[in-house]
Image 1 (cartoon, rainbow, N blue to C red):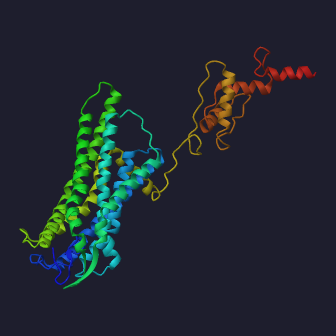
Image 2 (cartoon, rainbow, N blue to C red):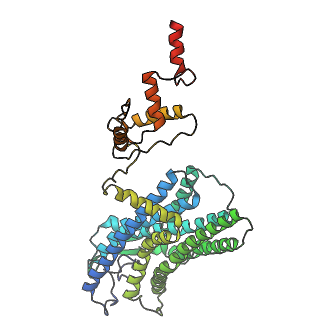
Image 3 (cartoon, rainbow, N blue to C red):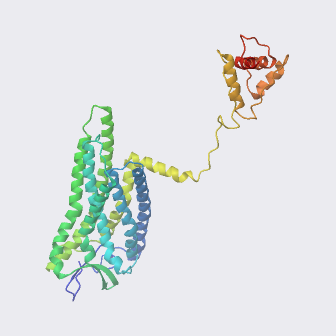
Length: 440
């Protein structure tokens, strides 16, 4: 990269200052004014959509864990979405602001931490995918085995992943500093002479340890897991479990492939820039010039778009997440909808009175039960028909049409009870007369 004259240090352009500190004429094919509007606009769209999708996915995963569906794979997916959300919320806005200006005006703290924070989040995502592949293979190997995992174990896994990611990217924080150039301040990576040997090894080991090794490990275990899913079982229950395992493996494998493809151009640019810087340190003429500006910008846009692609892959390939999205949408839209109209029922005033069945046996007891159920409907419909001594058939029919069906056995029951025209053999309430006789 660029070497500062009169200073015994090598300056390597990081992905942040590529816009503002470039002296090799990389803008000869593109108007910087157009890029200062177009690139921040694209980053803004990616940021808004990505934050919304990742927050929704995290809410669904947290809700499932709260309902008792806690698993290591879902927790690792949550960690992946969390890292994507951090990239979109705390890196993309500063990167868009840096692209919109000709010089760096975000301060020393942002310059010191911006690229380190981005690299740490990307490394955490890579390590998460590797652990996820191992967990998926263990699940697919024996899907019927009940595995209980505690929240403390998951937190320990998260701590180790983020500790490793933040530790391996320390040189991006250690050597970043502000430097004044031809166009003003620029955020650059300055490697002092005593650290050149270390950086020579680091620029070769860092891509292998963060990109090549974890993703190769993940792809290998996903391939083995998919091979396990291809073995069919004769039992229906095991067959259903294998179908579910196959869908889970396909979803996680798609996340790994998307990460490998969308992150690859950024690594090409990174290795290209550091190779040129190493050749300039040795005093040799590099075979290639600096990467074209269109390649650098496209690589960064693809890297940031990965944080938007991941929740979309989970949404389209996971039935559990689709159900969760639908349930969340129902809960969000239910408050805005008017309350449903009450449907006619047995407890509503507008409900029609259902007639009681005609008793076939034990007609007196059935008639009494029917009469009690009719009176419990309410005073508006509980008008009792008055028994007539004779010739009241027309009025009885009118009452029957208004208040319900009056059965002949019920009418005879009340008529005989009030007039006393019943025999001892056909006494409907013998216990009342027995009590009266006992008193006498």
